[in-house]
Length: 342
Image (cartoon, rainbow, N blue to C red):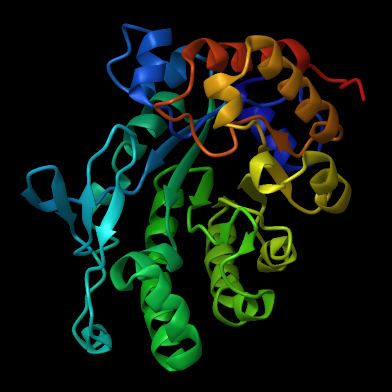
């Protein structure tokens, strides 16, 4: 099978020739240690034979202040050793900002970033994904997470209006990406801590689920699949992802209590499962045998019947041992051939 066929077969809950393997973010220190000639992650992804290649929505830097920068959303970030910068300051303090706020233009061609390159070079050869946020994390980063969660209780009308404004624009961007050639949209709002969701399942179904369904329906109408990424322990809200129409869920962090066997038993025919190899302690401090054992266990629990893609539990960070990551990829190919021994 081609990589594209392998991934599409798995998404249909059928067994491909082997378990698909990919990774959406690999730290430069790690991928250049494995492949010194790689000028960017794209080079590494292609050379490693990843079955899914991903582009990400791009937003311009509008100002820089030393090690910090501000993007088109007005959010301030500080650069660090990791591949993805994290916000350090909320962008707004008054709820009245929504009266004049304009979401960064979803039709700006710069948003698609490397997607046209992936489509030109790999369409129908590799599965092509495009990652963007729908509404929740943009709102949290603009307002501050604690403020946003408080406003869900004290200012629900404001939050509904804000989420509607954002999801309308981001849905348009997702549709543009599918029309430009993306097979899979990866929606990247995070909803949980390691001990459970950031809000009750009831609040989630009031504020998030209907809009996530609107987002998923639009992607499906264009012929795309929707993969829902989120960190943390999400067991209490997986049903909401299913009800919203998500085709897959990714990162499934074992450190947060996300057990692949339990997920396969409960949801293995409802939603595809992506991830579950600990990207923290295991890849940083475990042995290569520890890594291989974790991969074998994950495949044994999750791969039978399709609907499983092997990845880390989030991304490959700066702290990961390159040889451990190499061992993870090697073990995935060696032990991921169908039929799977269970």
